[in-house]
Length: 143
Image (cartoon, rainbow, N blue to C red; front, side):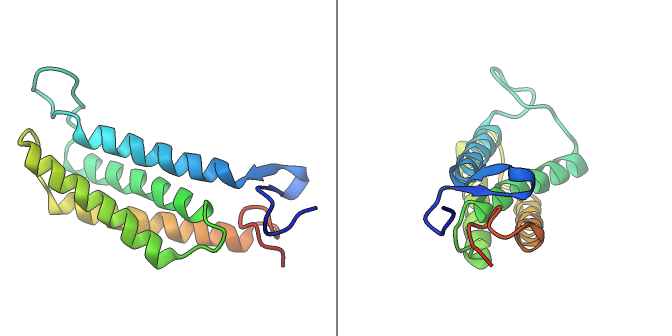
């Protein structure tokens, strides 16, 4: 029986999409973003990340936060896009502050902007998926 309390949902062609999978994906995305954000910059001893250049870094930030925000929306039974946007942008801003405080990296407002644009893109994509997917497949709601 599929209902609002089920953790697995039937989609088109009988595919099963467990809601916990979206939660796990959101946590994995958040953890990966946190780790990559706090790695020392290129040229410092130890583990480092590649120097991507400004444009590629902007796109990388936007894509990473789009994935995080989309997974966060899809993990919610009753999605709250504004709350999700605020939380994802706050997470990105907090990481930028920590980068500045660590001294090895610097806080960049351009990164915060990229994070916000990515979060908006991810939330928009998730909402579109929720509207276009067969009833109950992703959202857990029956129409």
